[in-house]
Length: 476
Ligand code: TYD
Ligand code: MG
Image 1 (cartoon, rainbow, N blue to C red):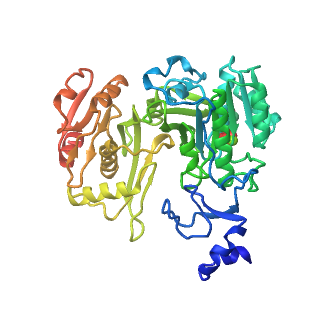
Image 2: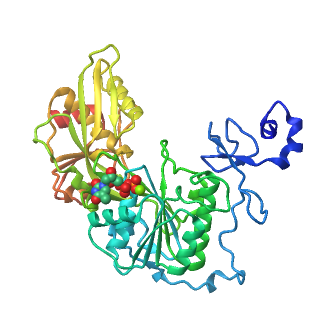
Image 3: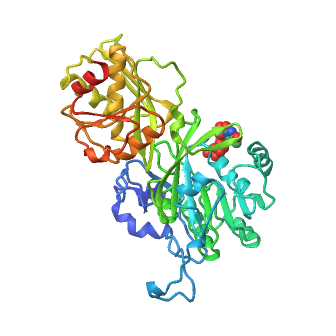
């Protein structure tokens, strides 16, 4: 009754009187904002329907509810001149998986906290267990709130390798985890996952906003005080954000996100926040029977698994993060069986596909309005580089005319709304990658500076300015 009265917008007069008796608060699951009453829209982040009711985050000493405690606070901290702060480059160490080291910006930084997010089943636990297994001398404490030591052992057997310095702990109570960590003094602490552990100081259940926030900040304090790097595993919600509050992303130093189709075998690990390096880095892994395998040359995804003369296939020289790689795009254009034609894209933005189809229809005169168009990106990857536009258009035209494109030809250009072929960034690196992989010809925009591709002798660079130009040069 009391809580109802406080939350009831029809009885505003009751609020002040009842506020002292509130035992629950409302948290926004998107940004962690708290409120004493339910609201349809979070005033902090503007998301709808994200407020959930949770017991108030009251601490034993009666500290302010819900306020995250200071992360770093030492007795003898005092203002210091920047020039007087001692620093050495070697407070980074390798964690045994080259691609992961690269995404982290050149290894793990001591005392840092890394969050690895991803959908269930994508390989977060596998990757985090592979770290101690491939780095034998590293004293690691692997805490799992999801699996028993036996299950972890079975997984470790599959992954191969071994590490006598790796300690396994199945525990979900934060205070116990911290106590064990202080005793063991690991060189690396892994917590799988942040949503399964909880602090006894709070009433709310594990995985709730206040618990996730409290556990993450306690672990951060441990990391900074003991200079121990901590890896947190976090689940991702359906809409792609890391479950629990966005606050988690603010607390940690590095956020790595696993992407990819859980049914496909390729996974991309992308850095979306990094206090110690670039966020342009990404690593490609392949899920095999023996765990995740590093794919140091992502273009190998391209290895053709069909005959040469198939129509509807075009190869794009794309760049994701800082890495150029070549990717196969497949299109199927067929006469629509129903009145409204279907347009479907897997791994590509379907709105952009609709735009490209409208450009083909209006600017280049192709009659695609009564055709079904399907696009698929090989390897289960998702692409967002506008440089893939030209390859998408080429694959659609190839399927429409049923004329195949030589597998030794690739494309790198954006298509504009007026049908013009626009230049893309880093065209030189794309050409260099295509040349390295033995491609014979690459189509780029004629608006690219000639100096950026004149240095490549092993590959023919064809410049085009419009879709009509593309058709003439490609299909004759
Ligand atoms: P997992 O790491 O448990 O996912 P997460 O922790 O992100 O939920 O990975 C689960 C999937 O990986 C599971 O579907 C099986 C597959 N897998 C392999 O294919 N090979 C392996 O060697 C391992 C350990 C898992
Ligand atoms: Mg897991």
